[in-house]
Length: 161
Image 1 (cartoon, one colour):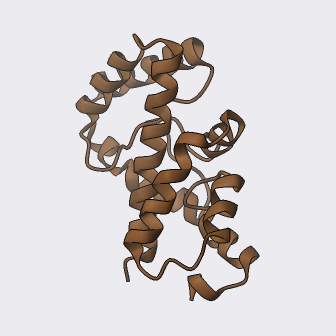
Image 2 (cartoon, rainbow, N blue to C red; image 1 turned 90 degrees about the vertical axis):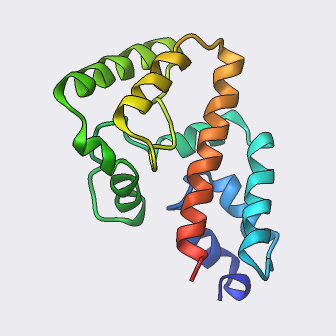
């Protein structure tokens, strides 16, 4: 149905998975895919050329690591699921992640984004600390890669049936 839906319906389906209008519009315009693998490859190919403003738009749909996203929409549900391992974090790790989020935002002026699914809180903290030492260009590449990974997992979940 996705391959044959009207463009605006396809865009609405995609936006909760990645909040970039350009990403969603590009994928909708390039249909049909026929198979999940083709959709995933097309999505992966969009991220390197996505303008910084579109990366920022996509980031706006992600809460800080350790914070619960409010709401019951698809994006909020996905975010809570992806960060579910944070519920097992001890108080020390949680406090260090809160401080790390503040340090990261002061350093890079954006929310710290990481594919949290499948990662333990201590691993997330270690990555946060490591990435604080990145220069701006290296961090920009890391953010795009994390966004690509998150989006890929979300696409797999949404379209694997």
